[in-house]
Structure formats: structure tokens, C-alpha cells
Length: 454
View 1: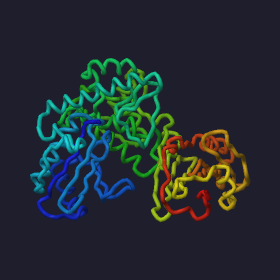
View 2 (view 1 turned 90 degrees about the horizontal axis):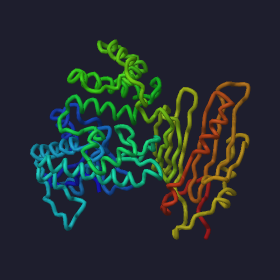
View 3 (view 1 turned 180 degrees about the horizontal axis):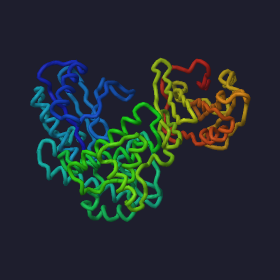
């Protein structure tokens, strides 16, 4: 179990979550200006209660808050991915919140509820927080070192994306070597640089490391395409600039700093100095996992491999239980839609060869048949539609099928020659993670019956 917080608090008076949190959000903005980067209200299929999520750092999972009744507040936060400084910051936030909003935190009861072990929260001892965080790091490094021969290990990274590197370890502060893992397993202090928020303050190192996290995992290294791309770039430039003002002697990523300035078309008083330092900077691996392909993990076990420069968005339709994703750049637009898991009450799933026979209705209006491939983990049938006399009307479509699960993909392009690129995308779609998904009692998709008659 990683280091984190699992708190239960008694509110002074009954509350409705959304109204209560509006007051909390206003308080956070005044008490911790610039620290909370975003908030959301919602409920996933795994959640029993409506909850609020708070983002304080790009390397950390959102903090989750919910009310199990009108006066019982729950807080859940994983803090190891960002570091001991982040952990101590959250402890301060929730102790100060308790004083401000009249919350009484329930004391520890490790024997009856081990998930609520929060010794660093109640002891208010920074040394204990650092000890537990570095003990966790040593344990993770030892495990990763053992597994490094069989592939790359990912340390506290978002499950939504799978980044790639030739190094043994992927972290939010960049990849680390097998030698680094062995050293940190013996001497965890040698791995302090993997924590983007090491100290509890918000000084120059905090600002620089926050920018580096965005640069490694979020920045798309091309001109801004989607809404938010330029905003993110400008935010990174702001963090770098503010860090430099506080401490010019830190090790700044000069080449990437200049690169982002060029993409965002930003010119300020530091620009000449940044470009000069970028030219003189030693050659090294450029920052940014999104300079290469990445695998995006979707629902029902599906995942897709896309260029890291592609923008992306997604929607969910609760009426049909369908997820829709869009991935695009200046030349291609990809629509990927997944459908629920189907089966009978006993969990029986229609075999793929039987389900294929039921797809005639789905194939109408998809275009001309191109090919069928059943050699991989995902059966697929590909079609192409479009007018060769026009330059903007090509659609490449693929039906993707594994036992009990169906996905539909459309690739839109201005060039017929992009058929090869589209087929490459279809071939890279995977559903390995779906092997562990059991039958879900969900509405059928009305056009195709994938329910077993057994």
C-alpha cells in the first residue's frame, strides 16, 4: 500500500455535498491561492456516493471527498506519486479545513480498518512522513529492480496512459535506469529526485518540478491543436519563469523551454536568454514521453496506440452505456466507440465466430470491404468509403470484436493513401485487459445481439 490519507470526519451540521464544497472551493482559493488546479463533481460506476475530486498537482491522483451521510465526510488521497512535500501539504490543508468548517476527524483504529492508517496525519511529525515515503520508495525500487529484466516498470503513474522508454523505470519526473533502481533499493535517499514535491514549501524547486511533470507527461510537442494545448504550454512557461525569478541557479530544461516558447509563440524578457542557453545546452534525451507513441487505456479492457502528439477527448452516454473517444491531429481524425459487455445471467458470452454472423446490420453503409483479420487477439473487419475524385471524403472503418465486447472505429482523412495508417491503428487496438472483465448486467446495444442463447 502506498503512502496516503484515508480520513473520516464528523461535520458540525448536516450538509449537501455540492453546496458545502462550493464554500470549500472558495476557501481553498483564498487560503491556498494557485494550488488547487481543478475540481470535479460526479460519480463513476465504482462509486457508491456522489463525490468531489480535487487536483493539486499534475503528478498526483485527484483527492476524493464524499459524504456517506449528511454529516460524515470521507477523504481519500494517494500521495506517494508526488512526494513527502505534497503529503505534508495535504495534511495542513485538511487540518486547517477542520478548524475552518468545524470537522472532527475520527481517530485511528488500525485493527478494525487498516485502510485508515494515517499515522503521519495525526502525529503531525514531518520526519515520520519522510521516513514512510522513502521506505515506500525503497520497497518499490527493489520490486522494480527484480522485474526490470522482463520489461519497463511504471512508478505511481496514471493508469490512463502507458508511456514507453528504453529505461527500466518510468516516472513523472522522467525515466530512470536499472542501475538507479538498484542504488535506491539500498539507499532510498539517492532517489529523492524522483519526487516532484520533496519539500513542503512552494518555492523554486516546486515550481520547476511541477513544470517538468507537465513536460514529461502532458505536453504535446507540436503546435497547439486542441483547446487547452496552448493554455497548458503557457502555464508551463509561467512556472519556469517564476522558478527562475526565485532561483536562477537551478538546472533548467533550456532546449525544451525554448521549444515550448516557439510552439506557443510567446516572447518575453527572458526569451533571448532562454534561446541562448538552449543553444549551449549539452545534448541529452529530450524531455517528453509524448514525443513517441503511447497507449491509451479505455473502458472494457480496450486500449489504443496513438502518436503522442495527437489530441484526445472522450464522452460517455449513460443511456446506451457507450464510451466515445476522439483522437486527432491536423491530418487524421479517429473516432473510437466501445459497447458494453454482453452475456446471459450465468455469464455465458457468445463466441466471436457466432457474433460475426450477427453483424450484417452493423456493416450497412460502412463502405467497401477491404480486409478481414482474425490472426490477432482482436478480430476485425475493415471498410473504406469515399469519393476518389474528392480530397476530403475518405472514411476508413473497422469493426473490432472479442468475446462479448465490441468496438467501432472510424478514421477520417483527406487522403486515400492514409488507408495503411488507418489499418495500422486498427491492428494496434488491444483488449488484453478485458480478459479479466466479467459479465455486466447492462442494456443491449439495439443493433447487434451479442447475448448467448446457452
